[in-house]
Image 1: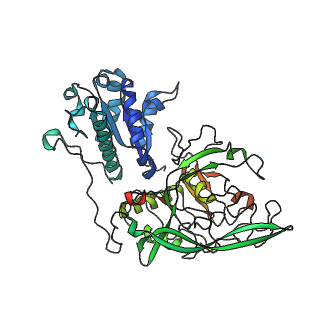
Image 2: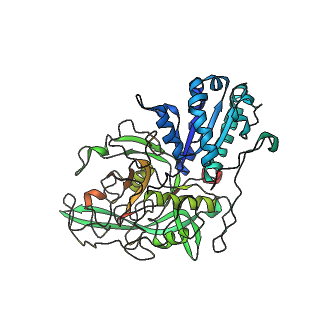
Image 3: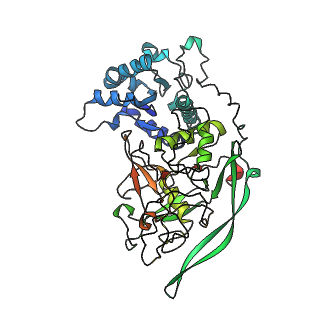
Length: 480
């Protein structure tokens, strides 16, 4: 029996005359798209020639929240009132779809079933009548209501106006912490930042031989307590720009690694290593958000080895549990964040230089890259941080396990965004492949390069696939 699709989609219903509001709302909820892996749908996603009814029913089957942008044009639209609203209201009654709505203009919404549902804003507060600053504030309130509805285990109760406080938004209660769990930390501030000692290494070729130049390194970051003596070390990745992808003359380059393009990123935190089995086990014991997690999925056992046999969906659940427990904004890295952090300012195929050696990474050492050396093929994962870090203090970026990124797969960087946001395919199917980066214990060295890209369907898992997380700064002291 096929399981029902995971409800992680926002269905937006609107009149095409109000399309500008959809675009503005999508910009406001970009952080939600990132932190909650939210997918968006509106009727502009219906491809030419497709049957609208089948497409709407398919979208509703994956929708957890429906947002109605109500206006006089909306209520006058035959398509909206006769074709979109009936199945949408039916899904709310029969399947628990959460309906949120706002008024854009004066309109006679009282004569429709819409008025039976609690409005996000008081219906008298019309978005079109607000000042630009007030409009942004209202859009933020709408985004907050969407976030709360997405995080609810069940859709919030739909309350008639007579029973509701008209200026309030339905929100879920905050769950009590589990007895064995660490207390949620206070909002992050500069006092949480620490200095961590590690080491880095560069490969240099002298007289036809490769030598390793090691040096000590101090990195800044913080430790997220996961309980039971387990912590997650996050290091600071500075803001900056870089050329993403590989140059056309890089050995073993694939066409999907180009064209190179400039990307500008804000500062963020990244896990110093792939998530370990001890860290996974701690979070897997926390309260479920959307899906169950196996406490010990890995093939190669070891508390400090990277967790593997985890799907993109499993990794996303791990991040959601971190968010729910800590109040921070954890997520999978965007592909741009991953490559930027991996390179750490380098432009060579690997962050430590022009080739790779098994003395610096865990991969298939029976193969070489360029004129690099052969070496040990360990044939399994090993403890994280067994080798020197890159220049920003990150370990295991070129082997051990492949790492999930948030983005959908594109087969080139044509029209790629120039910022740090994940690149999504609008209206993508739930099984659209997601990105993997970094190479693994089984990879040959060319598949461990900084620019190398791979993809797997989000439900796929294997013994060479793991992940690491990022966290976005949220306190002004972390954004000087």
